[in-house]
Image (tube, rainbow, N blue to C red):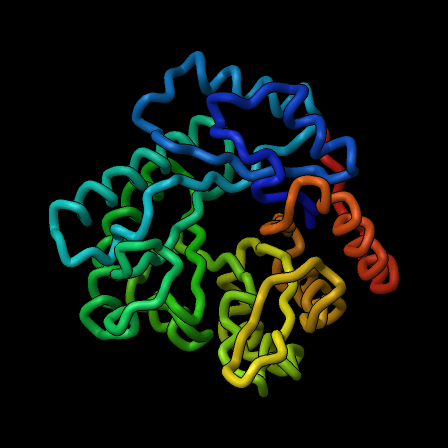
Length: 289
């Protein structure tokens, strides 16, 4: 596996430089994702510059992430078609960059954000629209020779391990895989207090579908109502040893991307993850361009 970062460099990919990306490799991380605001405006010379910035910084080009909101499940067909076309262009860009996969955001009907709850997010109609959108995108991905990496979460249409499996089965494309981010799915105190048992369901149902992962942590906030918040790796409730052990088993060539922390927190996070991996005798792959 490769250990890297998602969003340590928060710039759009058109603003990447070797200097900005070297901040990632200097820590010891070997891969970084690619943030894309608009794939339609990226030229061949832009692609060359991005690839050179990664090469000169000693980083592997990771998962591409397009900024397209939650439109794949929109009830507005014009908005949904526009979002599908955006992700199709992401497939083309991903292939041209030499990245193996592009991230697929399941979306939300909440107009305030793609990772926010809505009463209809768990409905069959929303699920069916996401399936239809993804089928169209997978055709483009197959033509470009790349993978689609779907993520989920409790507030999204893909809110459990079984729902993710049902979705992948319904789409029916070998280009579609799963980006495992366990924190996103935590929905109860029972799950929070036994994350090994919670994660084991995902590894059982989706063992052959996982193609990469995001890594972070969460904690329970003392309050009357259930309240979870993300926190730095190793300070929360995720059983990272079990998580890494199983990821090495089911996805030995995948990228594990640390995310959702300030840029200055990635180095201590890297050090903590290495402590877990050393105990497990997991050797992270190095990257040579």
